[in-house]
Image 1: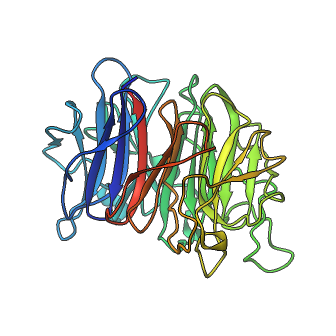
Image 2: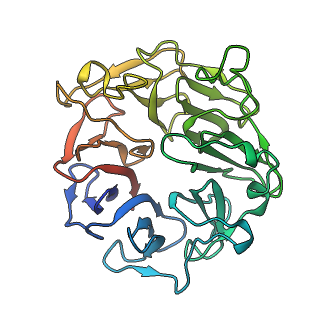
Length: 358
């Protein structure tokens, strides 16, 4: 079962391959010195396509793609993600690239300042979704520590009219009409950084990441600035499931595509420290939709470690569970997080990790 692991870092993209789903061999860096803030491996149809949201530095952000597993890369002749002139906005970063499971050629892009873009040519060129940009609450949106970033895009796997997005520090929004209109969907999500009596706002939550189970699309999991939540109705309401964790502060969250009740988080000391609990790497897994949690660290350094894991630097899928750290180490597990092995070390700061079976 050959697998491909894409590792986006502060200075380049690293691809690692496994011929049998076991050990991975890391290839030389691509886009050396260029930040890779988002990556997707689109396996729909025939030829896999790798998409990379890059940041040239002085020359700004863009999106490139490869149809030969990273050997060669292409870029649209005009800026692929660009704000219409009427917005007065300039693209700061492409935070998310998400192929649509229900529309063969559609790819969604989440951008900063918080906006959603849609591609109908497999991610080569994009058009801004006006309905979200023109939302009446936008003048009140506030950036999180990483900026006003739309970092999560969740297209429904069978109904292209339904899509969810999350932005920091705005919250979770959903559309049921293909993006024409949007509504905040943050019921029961507590924002403890707000004053007493105002901690359950309609919007303004600092959502760090949201994931969806592909076979149970109503099931969402959300990592908040403080709190871990589950929704069983595509975000209409949320239930706090973080009480069994030693810390409910963190950035990434991942769900096992084979089991809607199995999910993974990486708790940190919050909120100022933002280092691993006990200064050792531990991935916490729940097998019962967040009712209980178990920490797993076999094969990981015993410590002390002080590096965190960013919101898109963890993924779970048929190829395994993976995470990358801000000190350039990448770990993988082929047994649902029970044991871990080192895949790469001494890389630049890891920003995003995605894996796929080819």
